[in-house]
Length: 88
Length: 362
Image 1 (tube, one colour):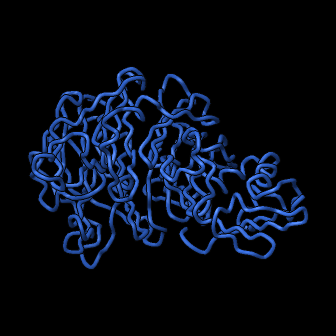
Image 2 (cartoon, helix red, strand yellow):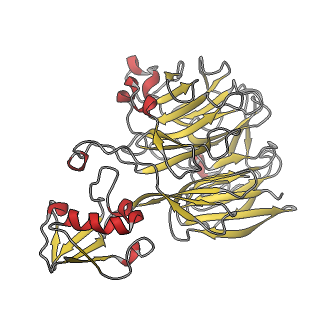
Image 3 (cartoon, helix red, strand yellow):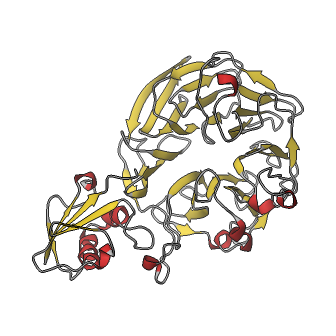
């Protein structure tokens, strides 16, 4: 189980506060979140299920910069999906 | 029903309504968000708004109560490719550039044009969208390339008023393509367009033309106009051929064109200094109007700034209403002007709006 948080910029389509989901990596955890919040998917992933360019991913305090969707999660991990301060 | 002007801007969708000679603001939706395109039904009840968030992608919203409430829809998406999540070249919609009703006889049918250049269709009032595979798989599409953006962009969708199955689209930089069977098959329809930006032996290649905007005359639909990257072009034979018009007195460069709904010989253009600088020629905002099919032009400037102006009019920023008398023009610096006499004189609606992406009269 991982605790997943989303930037307040996504409050119209994302869970309010933390959501606890299964998942051994970021992609699996997000898939579970999207199952409950389907409109959120297109805000985080593009048409090909790639992470959008200006999304920032933090796992257990680490800013993950490569292979973000494959990054492993521990059962007690905290995953933050944030807006990168670029683009826009 | 009062005339309304819908303004899709970098910071929201603004609605103005005309009472007598006065335009007044009646609504703002999506305050703070970039709205790239808007489409409105003739009764003002059904609206579609395309949002283009830099961080979170392209979004589509619909209102069925005249804009009082909005529902987010699933925006058009390219089909997921096998391995697409690892393939940086697999397509994804980056912007919605065009929206039109697909068939007046079938309410709830729509076309959307995107960047990268593709056409999507909905038969259920926008609930679901399907990529037009015929256009996407057209062999000549491989020759298309980006114009003002890295992506190619499909910005013009002309649904023929004689037959909704006949649809012409224009792409930067991919010229004009026509279907006569509702999108099953497509043919290139850019014979005569000329691209100065290509080597000499490629200048008349119809597959790489940078049409900035294409419009079709509703009352005489065999006539089309294009404001092209390096000129103005007109077709009077149902897209069999295009001829270049070289008489525009201020500039042949610009993005926008509007055609008179009843008179195929009358069209308006918003010229700019070509093409690497892109600002009003001599700092003066003017509209070029022809009433004789491009043989001659009037330069209309009454009511428009005539010094130190830097407003640029994007391709969807100059529109004419169904009477052919009322026009509106919106700029990159947030000015909007209207005219009630075919462009002879203009009035400032606002000088302080966000950059204007698209206008609609309904």
